[in-house]
Every structure is written in structure tokens, then in C-alpha cells.
Length: 337
Ligand SMILES: [Zn+2]
Ligand SMILES: [Zn+2]
Ligand SMILES: [Zn+2]
Image 1 (spheres, protein in one colour):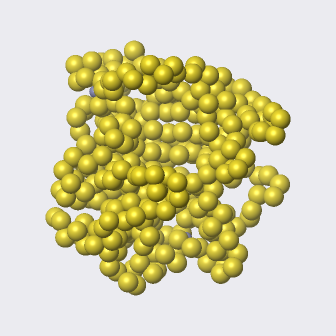
Image 2 (cartoon, protein in one colour):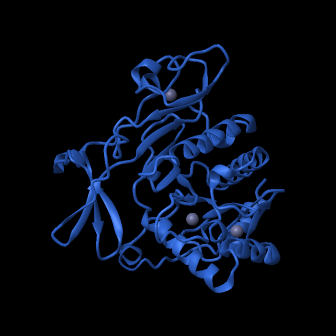
């Protein structure tokens, strides 16, 4: 089994794979599945690991064609569902087994469709499965966090040429999420208000960083974004866990997500990007678990275009330089049709 190790200086966990790559393995050219040999296309269902769930036409069977969205276990999982956490110390260090889940959400039977071109009805199915998978894995008390994300384009870490998103369920809360949670909690304990609700109110008041606004969501460029053209999609109703999303909100999220991705494509053409959902961690009852999580955290989706490469300055300092201001980025995104 792979092993999780904690960086005791930064409080960050890393997964160390048991089948270590040799230096030559890193020199292999990037291999992308060619269209003719795509294992995720309909007709090759029996060659993939058995599906976990799917949304499919009535009268069709699992692991056969007729699906609209299909969820599979990862082909090469980093986290595995069987076993115990095995938390232990080695000298001064901490480690544990890599318990969790890795899933691939095959977004469409169509090989070349982009998320923004899927059509709203189909995007609703994709988001419905996101919710369904999180709600299902949340019941496992060994799992602390579930991250849904998408890689689009080679530079963004995409492995398949077929449209997919991914799910990673981890036995620890990832550092980046933990930082958001800690800051939100601290803000709440001081002001007794959700920091995200305050950000929404401020962005709506100022208006210049808003990309679009619907009944249930706003999309905006964050005030101090890490990268140019980063945008956030956030529900205007306060709730911390993504899987509490209503049908009406799913419809709205689908529309806003497709619209922002379409706008980015109009401006940049074939832009590599990632998006991910930051939802609340699993609320397993435990000692010292904070009780204001429901009030202080607010789920959101972050779209991160991969426009610039990070230099030694950013890596060495965690200090980012933003070549386009969020106000200008939002203006470009608002104005493009
Ligand atoms: Zn395909
Ligand atoms: Zn809130
Ligand atoms: Zn976030």
C-alpha cells in the first residue's frame, strides 16, 4: 500500500507511492490516449474497472453502453478503500496508510465534447453525480475530505483525452483546505459572520470584480487572486457542504460554470485550466471538532486558468505576482459574449 507522510514543518501530507519510479520513467514522453483507442468511449465498458454508479438510459445495464455519466474507480489509485488508517509514528515523523478513494467521473459518452458545450441538461447530470458521490463517501468515518476536480489540457495535468473529472477522498484534510477552514473559523469567532457571505456582500456592493450573477450564484474574480483570470463560483445562500445543493441550485451552477468556461475559451481559445470544489470536511463527530463549521464555512468552486508558469519567486515565497488585475480580468470576462 502507498503511504502518507506528514511534513512536520508545514503540516502538509504527501502520498509516497510504493512502486517508486526510476529516473528514466520520468523521461518517457507524455502519452495521451488517442481517439481510436480511448478506453472511456462507449463500447469498451468491460475493459475498465467495474463502474461505481452511472446515470444511464432506462433499460440499459451497468458496464454496458447507454450511459450519460459514469463513475469508475481510478485505474491507478493512490488511495484505497480497504484497510485501516494505521496511524503511527516513526522516529519524530508521522505516517499512515493511504486509505481513501480515487474515482474518475466520465462526463459524457462523447469523446470530444467540452464541458461548456455539453448542454445544460447534461451538465446537470454531471453535477448531480458529484453530489451523489460526495454524499455517499461522506458516510465513511475514515474519510476526512472529498475533493472533486477537473484537469483540462496537458499543462493542467489531464491524462485522458475523453472528458472526465476526478474525485479524491483522503483520510486527512488537505493543507490548502485546512488553511481556508482555519481562517474562516477565526474570522467567525471574531465577527460572528461567515467570511464568504461577507465577501459575497462586498463583491456585490463594489461590483467591479463580478463576472455574472444569477438567482443562486455569483461568479467573480477574487480580490487578491493567486493567478490571472482565476474565478470563483459561490452560492449566495449560506451552507457549508456542497452535497446539500438543491436541484434549482445545480441548474444554476451548471449554467454559471458553462458560461464562465465559454467566456474563458472566447478570450484565450484552448486554455488549459483546473477547477475544484472546496466543500466542508466530513463532519464526523469527534472530540475538539469545532462546532461552528456549519456557520463559518461556505462551499465554492474555483476555476484556475493555467496562463502563466510559476517561478522560483512564487515557489520559494508563496508570494504571487498578478499580471492582470482581478478588476480588469472581470471586465474582460463580463464583456465577452
Ligand atoms: Zn473517448
Ligand atoms: Zn456563508
Ligand atoms: Zn477555496
